[in-house]
Image (tube, rainbow, N blue to C red):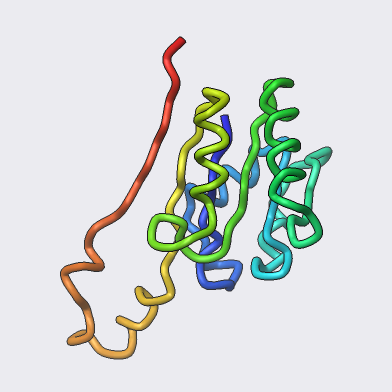
Length: 139
């Protein structure tokens, strides 16, 4: 299974509990090193393979995913922010779907949520919704 995890707005303590748990359990982590705080990787387990996608092509990222999936490894694709709202993951999802590889999206803490701390009147009903996406292939 491949999990796309939202890293949140950057601070190590603003990743979701679920996202951090996926990082702890991962056998492979592919992170956007030019955008994601590398401090988030401190929770990874010993022996976890880490790839910085800032130096990889999309094809190289996908090859790491395909190989890891074939070996039955737990793979985390760590993206900045909240992949449910915006992110460059669609082309990766399309490629996984073509190969019938299951994936899940774990939302991140969106930076706009932090803005509500400025004033209680800034809280919007839109913030109360949470997006979760899961794609499974039945064989």
